[in-house]
Image 1: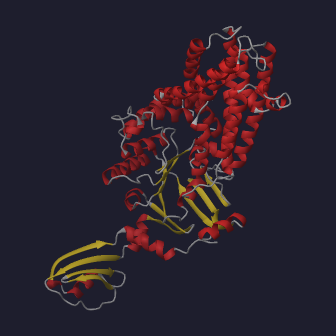
Image 2 (image 1 turned 60 degrees about the horizontal axis):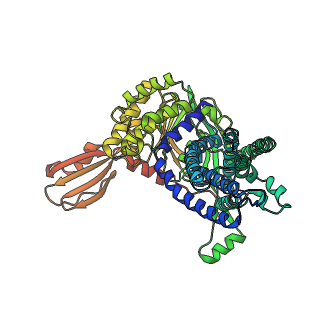
Image 3 (image 1 turned 120 degrees about the vertical axis):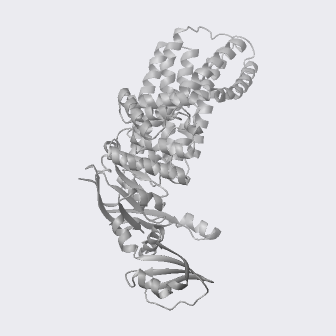
Length: 263
Length: 330
């Protein structure tokens, strides 16, 4: 396990040099949040209104937190690197080292989001406090409970993204599938909470990774309950185990299809 | 003791084939055609411990594919391979701890980290303890003379410095066999010579077996005691460097400047390669005619200047490539 910690540490050292680059993403984040604050201000006609069970403050904070997770999870490693490694044959040189390639990628990604997410979390707190106000009924201890959920959500997200990237073992380009997954997460779990969608669709959405990646952690922060917490944690564990199983299966089969150009 | 054993090792690649033009592109959608290329064809050889072996051949001969099978990167389609008694296909991870690889065209170093941080990283990857890694880094820093730039980010290093660091990164875990795939590609002659010296020193001091592929004849001539030539996936020659030179260097190049332009007599064993005025370039086959007899036939009294040299090893190898090539097997 030490080697994965070293990979994590090395990426951390590498990415710390690019903290300023990450901060450039703050501009897009701020613009997006600004639009949503105005949008929900308009949608909530009078104070105290509820939409899908959310107050205006809860709704805006929900969007800010999911966007924070979304921006914090942005990673070229899981979106492009794995596909590029497979298509370009570089994976052959990486699997030749005494580590397990998917865990190598996961360690790299964890280091990436461990830098990005706290930066976006700080920005979210500042924007939220300045433009929205506090979350109704929020207690600081909720953050401590939500942290493991966010970490698990980020890991599940990475596992599924790596699985999609690894389709490159069979198809020329896995990007359309990445696009589909990203848009699903963005529309269904990030911009709008699951409760906004028709009641018939909600159980289906709760069966998708969206529930565990964005919706779950954000919901816990804006409206914490012990039952919800256990429900989301259990769903995350099930998703992580299933996702890892799929990843292992794809990687084992894909590895045998390895073709290295220039051989 | 044999550290590498390959027996009837084979690898085929399926390559997509498309007819030319738009029509061909449309047809390829409905009736995709593939062609099977035999990249490595029943190759057998062995490498002794501590040996420095050159595994060479023209582009597409199957050199890198063979290395990739020996290191467990590619699965062979046929035959048997063992490196240090380990089957690379079944125990790739176990083998990774025993071998090192440098692919001249692929970077393994993290460019934003310093060589020192990179070496620590590789030490941890190969399960070396912190103290062990430190000791090894100090040892290799001295051998490869890295102290001037060990704390400079890799992205700021020159190509020669980077290649030295790449080799050190591959040696951090004390591999018993080192696979070098074109390690001097793109380097200037001075740096090349430096790298060769270090490789030779490493082989001598650390007793590392070296399996080298290169298109650079200088690498082969100066480093290797044995040469295996592959072409079209098959071994066309497996011989010692000394033997190769003895057998193929029986032809001498004689460059003569005569006092005046003279028509030279036709003699068996002498081929006129070029004649321009009073300057003549001859090839003398010493297995047919002795060199002093050849000189006598030129008429030494009229010779103003003379230079006798061996045929460059590069030409010999090129001839072997040409004479043994047979095209891809479908």
